Length: 72
Image (cartoon, rainbow, N blue to C red; front, side, top):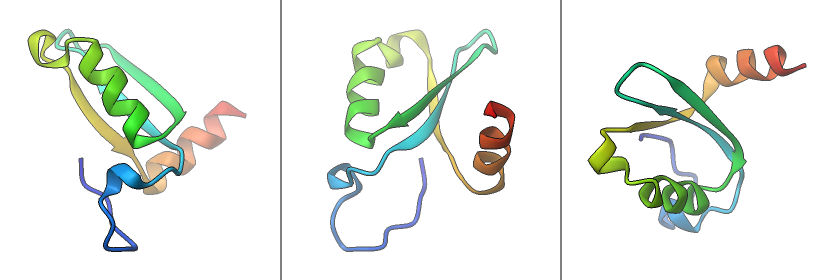
């Protein structure tokens, strides 16, 4: 997961809400919207992500804008 930092504080202290995509090994994708990085990682790890082979990434930029348009 790579995003730009605007301060020197670690990202897990950032309380802004973002959108994350969870990808399952079978190709199924799940979006988590309006969730902080701390809550997202807690939920992700509690699912057993490593054992299940899940992948996580933050939706940013043009992809995020397209997602917002599709939601309307």
